[in-house]
Length: 414
Image 1: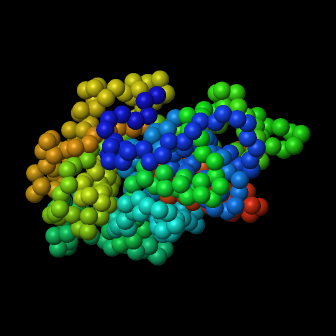
Image 2: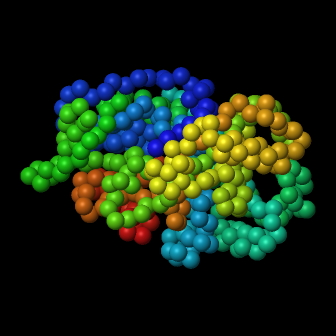
Image 3: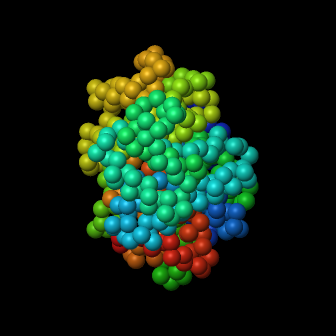
């Protein structure tokens, strides 16, 4: 599969901060984390800071697969809205799922305050809207449900909006808190630097070929592509959609390819209230965020990928479809902010990547019966960063003997 293609903003702006060695010896540890993207990094940070012997292995380069293509929009809003989640799992589960994401924004801010890099973290308001009048009724229902359960929301419509937005809004939910943005690549490396200070051992270019439980001592042994072994009490899988290969008889979601374009810096953008995060109600939806250096990122135009050997899963960067999707995003950007008059020449970065959707927009966190010594922290969906942060805390509690009822929200049997 071609995970990422194009010129990614985050790695184009940041040289590789540190090159980690590959594993050249056998190791014994308490926990092995497989996956060196943001999910693995934040899990390693949590476990190492708790004083647990931790080893992290990454098969390629730290942060160079889906992490570097992430838009890193941090939102309490889930791909599946609260009304839909209520119909699937009940109101308590729906509200709790939203609340965990809401709380995770503050939790991430606190984590970043312990690092040696601010990682371009910024809190933000967020707008969930539709320009279509026939969406207003269900959007109002969603707004009322969120307001009822204490989320900081405001109902807006274009004719009542006092010029805060330059584009038509038939109805929208503006949330004053519970959102933010970050640089995912810098965050990954900053987390691993702090984890390493706390004693974690980190190896890249170290692929795991085999995971075998040892019933004689209750431990598990992983074997690298070069035949070295790491023996541990627990293995934590943080490999994103690659982990789907480990789960038997269950479809964890569907692959899609998403596209992003990034503009030159704009010091002023008329009709963009507080440079808030913007997401529409289309399927697939379009999203907009800003950057610290005042660029605009717009993404979406997702294409279902099908299987791992499909054309979309292995899409070449020179395929006509790629340019078509980039052009569609540019057109949408021009419609959102007409006064900017954005042209092709104003687009400085373009890239596309695979990601995994789930039927309910929720991640998979926890265990499966046939891997008794494995935990999974799989941040599928658009809330990946907040999900894996929540997952890292839940799994740390589980390792230390406390099983949170929140794990039931993200179990593999749902």
